[in-house]
Length: 372
Image 1 (cartoon, rainbow, N blue to C red):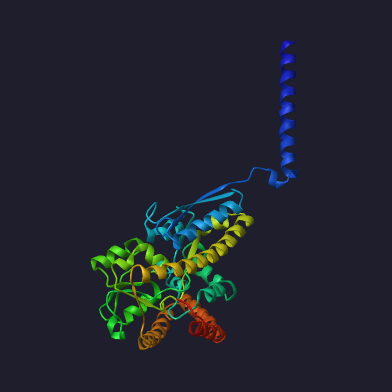
Image 2 (tube, rainbow, N blue to C red; image 1 turned 135 degrees about the vertical axis):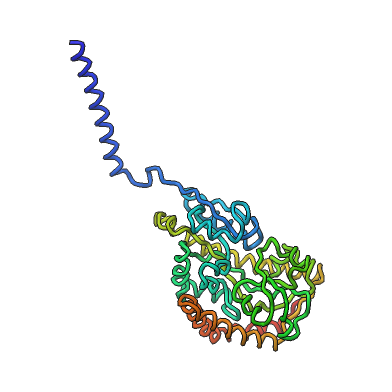
């Protein structure tokens, strides 16, 4: 009798557990998804910039903050500056391998992996910031960029735009194209290829080494971005002349690259948040750069007595001709390079016709509006 009662009691417990489990299973089918605990994504982003560096570094921070806030904490991105986890130029390797989820840098840094990537940053005598952003969104640029970055195992997003750049810092005057002969210059990307064709020696170093390199004489000249960033690095302490315009990079976009497997594993809402945050961060960076350049240029001229010089027209003319030759030759080396270059040139040619209006306005404003 005792054993019978014990078995009956155990059976009642079993039935209660079964009912509880069945009820929980049924509830999981009818309770709205938003009331069920959401999966959280804690990702790392490695960058090619010093931590929180104005403009370039802050674009990554802005993007991460937007994603974190807009996702309601569902995704948390922690940003690491160059060297904190991996060296600057190893960011792509870390993300491609899946060791790190995402990175932030400049497409021309990855030309050693996929040659066509460098065209995405900028081309000499190419697109303005507005034209560049428009080409990516409306001119087919995003589709081509995804095709290029897929070869590196990544998803691509524009995540920052430098705005109009300067022509660089030099320790000797550039009066004629021959002055590039033997010049040692930090000039990445396609602009660097043109400098090589003009007789210069190109050295590719990251931002943290710029000042020490020109101070030591390891390089004779360098281009970085513009007054806002150049002032922050103190390049004026070691270079005599600051040239314009930035023919080599009329603007340059920054990239957010995400491990493709990690990207594909994300739910659609987070994919949308990342996409929109990248666009917002791009616009915010451009705004920051233009406003920062305005103030920094005045500081460089008035406080630090920097000599700002325009490239002579004859030098610009020869550089433009040389650029066309170099880019036509380089882009014919592989299918993807030819595809991206052809697309950019088509967009640029249409933009040149349209920009006559803007050109005339800027000339008029410069001539007739009083300013100090």
